[in-house]
Length: 225
Image 1 (spheres, rainbow, N blue to C red):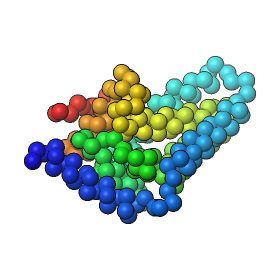
Image 2: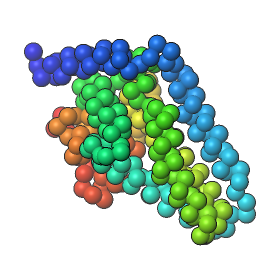
Image 3: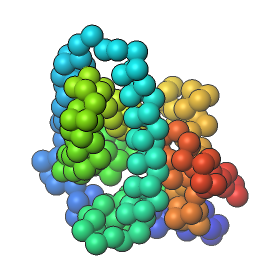
Image 4: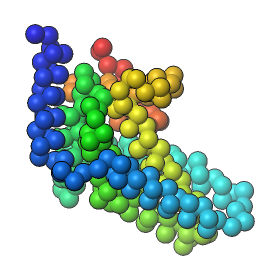
């Protein structure tokens, strides 16, 4: 039996265990998607609706927030998502102990919609990350600069998070979906697949979206194949 076949067998066994122990009978992928993109999209719309007479200098908030979000994604992934950290044990458990055993470089696609439980952020973690990384900074910016800057920061952070969820979902779709084969998406998808190689996951390719942090800190890597 080849190493890839052995790895695929381990994944199949863990998936059966995960579905039994962590996917409740009442779980509905459609509701999970609706919460993520419905609540997230509504919050984004509210932030945009509060903008008024945005000045040219205030628009700089958008690219700066994009960079902040990319680096927060990078360090959050490189840090507590792959290294057990006091107070963030749930993050490590969910990501390293579950997500990375459910999906490896030889078994990336979901088998059914119910497997989205292992892909999308749980609602509680979605609220936690937005509250920890977006809300405090938005309030500080609004206090020390302007309301527009605060709302632009919140809107860009939410848009980045939704973009993260879309891309991560696409990475774990079967190849038959056309979006998974789009050239640019395909390149990002291959980087993420390499990250799911157990030999690489704690060292390389920590950006789930765009590998800015990986390029800055020298952790972008193509796997051995």
